[in-house]
Image 1: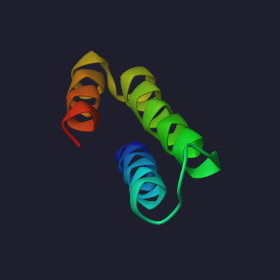
Image 2 (image 1 turned 120 degrees about the horizontal axis):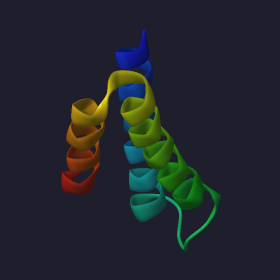
Image 3 (image 1 turned 180 degrees about the horizontal axis):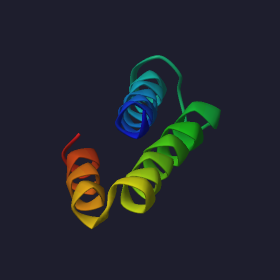
Length: 64
């Protein structure tokens, strides 16, 4: 369940950032929420799944 939540948070963050870049002009609610979801996904992975999973999630978010 924890891995599913991390994946869901990261995918939601990426989707919101893509919406902000291509559909909605400016730096608004979708962009801020997208960054928030990405940060929450990394923090959740780091706390619940361990340091290695946190580092992998962080690197994945940086690449995306």
